[in-house]
Every structure is written in structure tokens, then in C-alpha cells.
Image 1 (cartoon, rainbow, N blue to C red):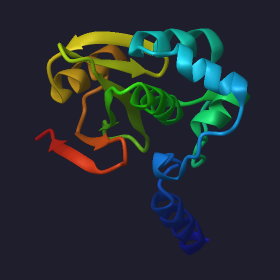
Image 2: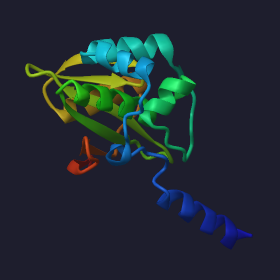
Image 3: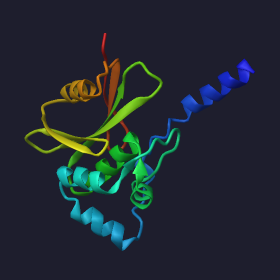
Length: 168
């Protein structure tokens, strides 16, 4: 029984924990979805839209696309982050996703937007701005959550690792 449980745990860990890869996302031919995308032309509008229209629901080991989140209206931090990154990238913003580890089983994701004079984020649906660098974002997110980060990884739009930092 212990072996089976160990095999299941390893398989789940190798499954990527449900992080959606935007490389494979094809924008659907849905006029309502496209109208929403067109209207959300700033990171602040993206955060406001998510606050007004989406509910937090954990999706362990499941990855919803931005369109599926739009349809189902429920998602978790990585799903919200990919939704925000997709729409901001559509409008020409530089975008990143930060995965924050705090020593627990789960990690936390935030979307990051380069707004020229500062970096801004959506942490789940909440919009914040005025950051100078990724580490400042991680520290702020962990302070709000009363967590101590052990590691963070910054990904670009295409899920390439841009930065990995360990907190020694």
C-alpha cells in the first residue's frame, strides 16, 4: 500500500500540478470572449474584471485555459495568473508569472505586468502596483499571506524560466 501511495504521489508531482501552458492556447471564435479581451486593456481592468466575475476554487492538478475560466467563472491562483498574463500580452504588455514556494506542498502563483514605470501584479484577482523588481513582489505577497518564501521562479509568457531564487 505504501508503494502505491508513493507512486501516486510521484505521478502527481510530475504532472505539473495543473499549470496551464499558453503555448498551446488558441483563442476561440467566441465574440463575447473577444469583446471582454478587447475591453481589458490594462492590468488594473483585468484585476477588476476577475474580482467582479470570478470565484476562487481550488483545482488541484487541473489546468483550465483562459477561455475555460471565462466560461466556468471559477479558478485558483495559477488559472487566474494565466488569464491575466494572456490578456495583458494580447494588449502588448510584458508579462511574467511568479511561482512562490513556502515549504508547504502547494506553491502560489501571481501574474506580473510590466507597466513601463513599475511592475504590477494580480494576486488571485487583486491588483497591486508600484513594484521595482520580482523579489519585492514575492516579499509583499508573502507578507500579506503571512508566509516565508523558500524559493521563487519567474516565468515569461511562454513558461521559460527567467529567474530562480532560493531564500537561504
